[in-house]
Length: 170
Image 1 (cartoon, rainbow, N blue to C red):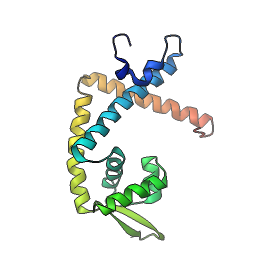
Image 2 (image 1 turned 90 degrees about the vertical axis):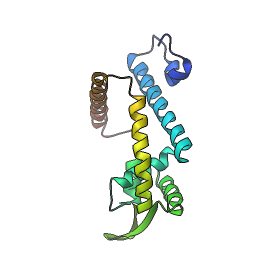
Image 3 (image 1 turned 180 degrees about the vertical axis):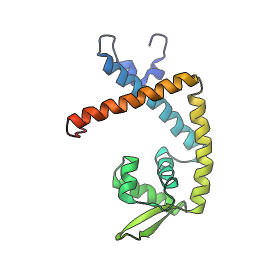
Image 4 (image 1 turned 90 degrees about the horizontal axis):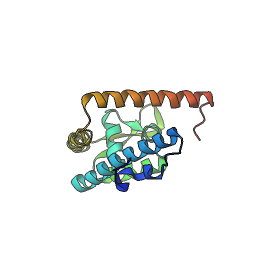
């Protein structure tokens, strides 16, 4: 941490040397995540006039050409159904998504990308990938591989802790 600016540290600036290493690690992880997220949000806004939430919704739909029902879409995005409805309303007005009856459940609708939505997302996704490569570009291949492995281990650890607690998340 010495020599790093408070701006780059973000939440990590709260950590003190005497804090438990897990707390310092948590704050470092949040700080790094926020740095990347904020930069990507800013670039999406400047370059495409869109938000990260809208990009994420389009990305979810791109993976499911047959579309997704609102509930599963909300779960995949980890946001409320109300947020998904608002985003779908906006994207539908712009002609990027369409609501269709769900053939398996007459009460439900599926949201699917339109051809224009698919084209626009493909352009954004290609540029977005370049940004991520750029932002992670100062890490060596070995560092990226190591970080990927360590984050997988962290996910396993958290998953095991939650399983011991009966799946409780909060």
